[in-house]
Image 1 (cartoon, rainbow, N blue to C red):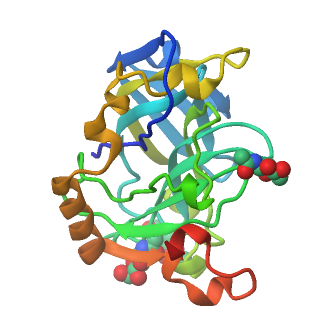
Image 2: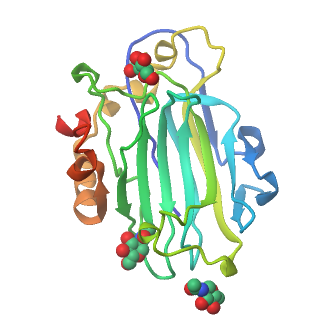
Length: 269
Ligand SMILES: *[C@@H]1O[C@H](CO)[C@@H](O)[C@H](O)[C@H]1NC(C)=O
Ligand SMILES: *[C@@H]1O[C@H](CO)[C@@H](O)[C@H](O)[C@H]1NC(C)=O
Ligand SMILES: *[C@@H]1O[C@H](CO)[C@@H](O)[C@H](O)[C@H]1NC(C)=O
């Protein structure tokens, strides 16, 4: 089981904000299946996704959010999970979308899962990091993407995002670089999501006000307080501990990958 903390951010003032806050929510109130609904089973607080050789499946929130926190407890595929990817992510729509990803890459029985995080800003991704997981993951930050817009580095703060979950086959790349393939004799592969926590600013697509103004800094929300403006000392130490002990890959260290276009700007500052 693990809890996932999503990115926070802060900006310019104003307006009355409607904050949508849910705990241990009723799945159907907040989410809808958007891919292979027949592979998704809802039982009380628990939502089970399954993957077989015919298809994976996925769901998304009915509403979109800007700034805040979205969390869930996940129980990943047990035993042999080679080739499978369980995704929990937030994404806006369109070609220039913003996206925050957690992708759990399966492995052979007894070998470690990897969590891959990625970030798309205005349609550009290629910001992967990979970590091994430890026993208690809850509430420990694994990644920070600071707002350095002043240095011309884009920041995902303008587009409201839906909250998504999915389970799919990605055996062309997911496990040990794609060398090990999904063993379909172990299907169906199942994952469970439960205990949702969404504390975020809800934004409707026809919102007329500036989204940053509507959901941004007003001093009214926890994500606008100075205390969350920066990762605090304790969290900085936790980040360092995670980096030192569990980091497998960081795009910012992958010089060979970016020889043509140069390292992404955020890696240089
Ligand atoms: C997003 O990308 C488009 C090109 O696809 C560009 O025209 C636009 O200026 C970019 N927006 C921001 C905020 O960087
Ligand atoms: C799977 O296990 C192998 C061997 O321990 C490891 O090298 C790899 O990073 C693990 N995770 C994935 C997703 O391949
Ligand atoms: C797939 O799983 C079955 C059942 O456990 C096993 O007999 C078979 O050897 C596995 N195939 C591969 C390629 O590992």
